[in-house]
Length: 299
Ligand SMILES: C[S@@+](CC[C@H](N)C(=O)[O-])C[C@H]1O[C@@H](n2cnc3c(N)ncnc32)[C@H](O)[C@@H]1O
Image 1 (spheres, protein in one colour):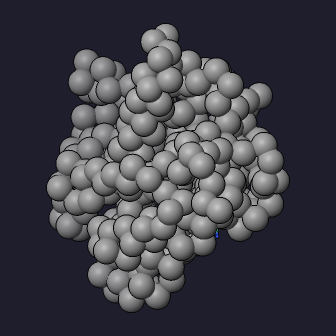
Image 2 (tube, protein in one colour):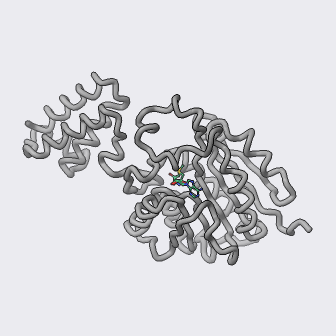
Image 3 (cartoon, helix red, strand yellow):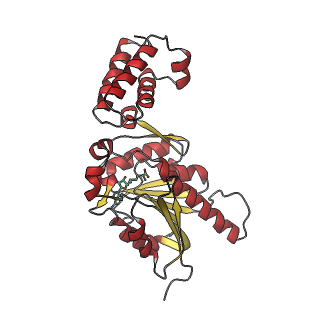
């Protein structure tokens, strides 16, 4: 069968099964089995697939119809213009998580300006922690943009940490990143403290599980999705422990669930925190909360 026929047949099967983004899914799966890029599909649609490629492609189309996310079938997802390996042990990086990186970089830049330093932000001397690193997407993105920074990435899931390590290696940042299996920051020594702590914690409520797409509910890891019955349960601990692990003036940046803000914002209403800010995502949902640890410790 030629590539065009396989592509069209795959699209038809996915569409008839009610799969969302069916054309994109067919394209990604076909390019994956053929080990080619997009240009090939549109420039050489008459190319014959090998029989095993054709068989693999339609097997993947069937698995997609059965609910497996395309990214787990191809083993990859782009984030911050970098390609990440993903397996069912990790959450598939989401575009809205890029706001965490943007807010963190903005806050660091403001700190530099306040300190009267004008040089381009290289992250020289910065210590950064990513809590619940999953695929490692946040840690790796920050390592890319801050070539002078040292990073610590934690996760409660050893299988996720293996994926994160491979992603750090693949992009050449493994020598600047330590990976620690830990509940939140429990296994991280309290000194030296960090200049920046970032986290996209699990924030979906178990009570919301029935409303999730089956691709998410049945295939992404429950430890990555659910923060408790309501969803926001991990934030209190995360914020308290982050305060202990941040330098005075250090920055905390957290991703929020679509309805987490009312439960999370009051947790920053203590003398330990200042300059609390909330950033909406492109859908207008409060998606990131950031704050600075107060410079003189409360007595
Ligand atoms: C929402 S996912 C985020 C993954 C990745 N940082 C991202 O943004 O795509 C949350 C991650 O936190 C991890 N996790 C869940 N509970 C944790 C805990 N108590 N301590 C540390 N990590 C935890 C999960 O295993 C998962 O990898």
